[in-house]
Image (cartoon, rainbow, N blue to C red):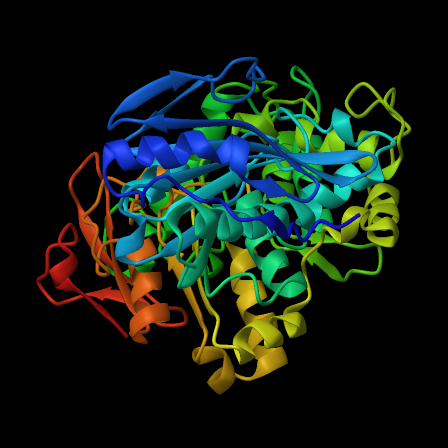
Length: 525
């Protein structure tokens, strides 16, 4: 099966896109004039500025509507990637593309097969021909993986490659000129997809912007499963209810907030926080209360939450949960984390009736982790730092970021990955193509108590569109102008606070007498 998607017939547009009338003519011609191997164009519609549309038959776990901020041609395609798999894509072709001729691919989140419409809208509004896919399956569940290894391969890496090739080729046919630069934007699973893409397909992109990457994916799944198991079932002596978990997070911040010399409700570097619950949170000896204070059994649970995941020989598998991070109900509600459940059921064991704790007492998480390591479904792990070399050698650039209050993927894992890349490639070589921003107080992909908005995805676009405040434009400046981004300005859109963010291993330090809510008063050291 040829999934490199070579154009077999060029599109001859009625006019060059750039005005609404010309765009409409070119867009309407796509379905009838453009032929692509293994691909069916299922729709091509020109959308005026600020058009909101519904998505027929959208999976209930995916978005049911989207808005195009600028005039563009919306192209929908289905591509066969094997005899048993397909990828559904959407390409948004804005009228303003020819100004800079950039294409951009977008990623997904969790196990989902949901197109990231917010990031499509964001990137197309900046002139990128932007594409997204359903990641080879529909909806936020792993059930389509069951007994379908080709679908797993699409999820692991092939869908991003397919959408990228499509974007380049359809954009060339539509505009009549080739793209100049190719970019990637994704967070969480989208972060893993970005790193996996440059490991597998080093010529696909010139620059990648990846956040909270779910790399070392199989151990991440095991770690998230462990987090959901430690507390036991609701009502058990080890379970900690949500209000008390919130008190634990707040207690950690109280203990470690000022380690950086600034009292701002944020732990800048959680690795320096050796947290132990304060006396005020501990129950008196003999009490059985489990909702207002921590019993001895619950204190043991807290200790487990802040320990790294290790194998039976004591080797590190995955870093610990960062102290001060909000406890996500997705992992700490007393139910087995559903992403982990789906991964084990539908990809590792192919047993849809598999039962997990707390209902199951015979499930062995260490065995599941070991089995997953052996199988590595679809080669999904994406933990091969030496394989970044080809991308770096051809001049590719990586801008990556991770919040240190991420409740789903430990921010410490990106530090661990940074160290692995440095050890593999050397610091000098790494510095030429790689920048990592460890963002104090930022939650998963954006937001949180810190300054977690810097234009990194569609959900974080409410910042100035320049290289100082906006990570997308900072990456563009690096790729196209060789201006390496050693600093960014993060914004808290709720409080208005701004802060200078520094490329790791540098840290932002508040100037003497400075205002911690103003970026100008922070410096990188």
